[in-house]
Amino acid sequence: MQFEQITIVGVGLIGGSVGLAVKSRHIAKRVVGVDRDAAKLGRAAALGAIDLGTTDLDEGVTGSLLVVVCTPVDTIAEVILHAIPHAQEGTIFTDAGSVKGGLYEAVQHALGERFAFIPAHPLAGAETSGPEHARADMFEHRVTVLTPHEPERDIDALTRVEEFWRSLGSRLVRMSAADHDRDLAITSHLPHAVASAVAGSTSLELLSLTASGFKDLTRIAASNPELWAAIFQANRDPVLSALSAFTDRLSEFRRLLEAGDRAGLVKWFMEGKQVRDALGT
Amino acid sequence: MQFEQITIVGVGLIGGSVGLAVKSRHIAKRVVGVDRDAAKLGRAAALGAIDLGTTDLDEGVTGSLLVVVCTPVDTIAEVILHAIPHAQEGTIFTDAGSVKGGLYEAVQHALGERFAFIPAHPLAGAETSGPEHARADMFEHRVTVLTPHEPERDIDALTRVEEFWRSLGSRLVRMSAADHDRDLAITSHLPHAVASAVAGSTSLELLSLTASGFKDLTRIAASNPELWAAIFQANRDPVLSALSAFTDRLSEFRRLLEAGDRAGLVKWFMEGKQVRDALGT
Image (tube, rainbow over all chains, first blue to last red; front, side, top):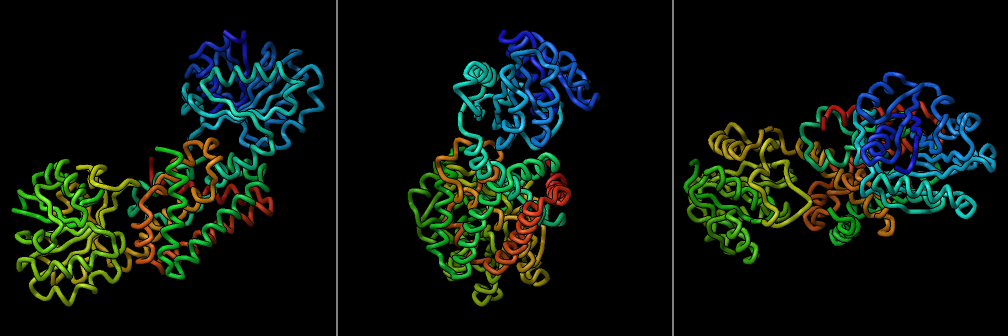
């Protein structure tokens, strides 16, 4: 048992999964859930993802030395800033947000010497929302990226947070917030926009003429629009760069198709196949 | 048993699956496979997809009243034209190609009154190739589109071909070749190019930072480049139209993101989600 008590703020799909994983792996004796939505707290408790829930953040962080913030990306800093005055000295914060740039800087002044924040991004999730879709194995064999601001200074907190995410089953990767945001714009954020654009440019009457390729490609288009709009706004510039690289590649396809360049088309598809084959099934 | 003997030309993933389905559902007493690749015929026979195989098309169509052409789209007409002089009077041809425009017209003069061709497109497949990936249930609960050129004139052949594809487990949809090509450009062809463009604009070093969304989205990017280059060339103009609609939608996303229009982004994602939600899981 690593912790006497931990607090999870935001008990949706990810927060609920953190709770289930913590409980099933006996990582904390007690899990406190905080959410603005009391009904969601009730569902999370009924599912065993949390032991007790409260809509009061101040109360919820009392007595926990680890606070895991699983709220939408545009509220994480705000949650930490509100929690700090009520948190026990030595409390460590971590999060599960998809964008890391500017996040540490937004809370840095409030952390002082008494608190630490180790930003984290578990590369896990689903197109569904809410604790009812949470899974205890959500983070197993998945990468969790940590973007510590000052790893040397925060070495104790970093070690604790690494142990925490590793104990949920994930594999750790450490990088800078800027590198994370640039890379994830390509591997996660842009694909969401592309999936949505494919779905959004297909009329409902044509759905009966789709097969498994369309279904798999557009699966993430069913994700929560509010959450993803916030992610895109928070990571705007890297996403715009990734979008340009993607549209350049698609323009090359258009050029080859218009020119009737069969060999060029085969080569173009082969380049995509080589990347996908390297990923495995 | 509907048929004494049928011939499948091209015993890859789709042809092999037709063979397995025919055998397992006892639709023909004997299945003859034709392929230029003798080794592939051997594998198809070993898997039970065909009873006997030959690299000689003339020989292969002898004695069959149904010939199912499962070769790449740019060779289907050629196969039928070569087969006709050796086929028994009354032989019906069907195919499994992804593009229908111009196909009937290319063989019409050779069919005369003695032969019939009912073009078909089963909306089934996988990113894999070869008879070793064939499945007897490939067509179960899948749509097969038929694009008969003159349904009234060819009513007997059409009925037979409908019975055939239905007997493999698929649900039939009838439409014109032009409608098929316009619709499939949107629901199948464009998504292939998009999946390939996402994979192809991602460097290999970033693959460790991908999760299930990227994996599902790019799955079809592993498909056979030769087959897909041929499909795109055969359906060039409808694909270019679908590509324009898609890039327009993506440009709208770029505009909203650049403008910082949160409500617009939420609405944009919601439109894609509504289409995807309508498709179901």
